[in-house]
Image 1 (spheres, rainbow, N blue to C red):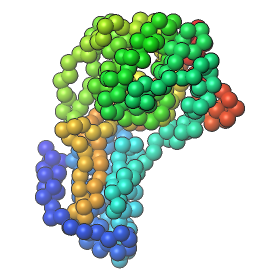
Image 2 (image 1 turned 60 degrees about the vertical axis):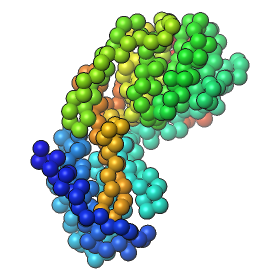
Image 3 (image 1 turned 45 degrees about the horizontal axis):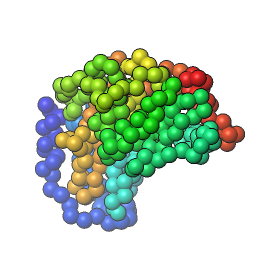
Image 4 (image 1 turned 180 degrees about the horizontal axis):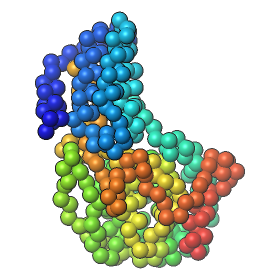
Length: 336
């Protein structure tokens, strides 16, 4: 309750109406007010300070000293550095031009950013791949009657609209590969539009805390005119992030599904429609701090930890350059 009172207090701080483009031109008082406000927002709402063993009080001392050490302390770089202490891939701020700047990129994302190639994936097909109506699902049937679909993200509504047609096209295959090896966010209903087509019985949703409160969520029900019952492989790597990780965790619970690849990026502290996580600093600069604490079925968050695959197959940029997608090849062999 004390932290909530802090937040309410700082939401009433008098706002400054303008800020200069050069850090050195921003007055020291404004830098301090932005720093102080941002620190208290994090202290009030961020769910993983204890989990990550971050001494947020000591962070205040360190950055207060940085401000006091110079007559013209840097503005945006100081805010960025402080928020980066959270080591959270969802945290960002908007600069003076409104550009979104993420303050931290998880190591697994960096490791795998060049470890998958759509161009290379297409070389495994004997025919040209198809695109869904929205252009966001690439799919076709591989040799040995193995279905394949590359889901580009879980945002907007395209999965709800496009996936039924894609699944219908792949319905008579001996197995399906769902490839989500890239950074992606999105909404639960788009995830569930896919997961529900592989379910035979209702499924509990993962625990979802919003601003520290556990939300009661109904079970997810099977959907569609039929469910796909043959084996399914979900391909993941470090670029699989946020909503992609929720999708992975839910699919892992299904008996016919095997998750192959590498551990996902580790980002479960996003935002929710009724608690967006966006806060305007006194200068007008906007910061985004996650308000949700999403959990795996083992009760742990996937923040930092990620979602481990059932079968770990490492893949590097060197593999891609040599013309091999080892993770895809393993999935194909598994479904033959």
